[in-house]
Length: 62
Image 1 (tube, rainbow, N blue to C red):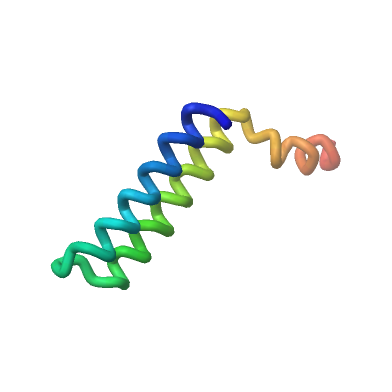
Image 2 (cartoon, rainbow, N blue to C red):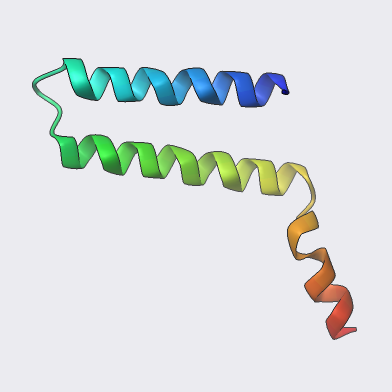
């Protein structure tokens, strides 16, 4: 587990807890925030790995 994964897990847990506890945040907005944070986490990890998930597709085309 990397530090990035650790911090992301804490952030997701904190967001989920805030949605449950805070009455001013709707469930829809909370779910949208969790989905957005997850997407940004995936995007950041993808950029950090230089797009290694898509490297095979590019080499197949060449």
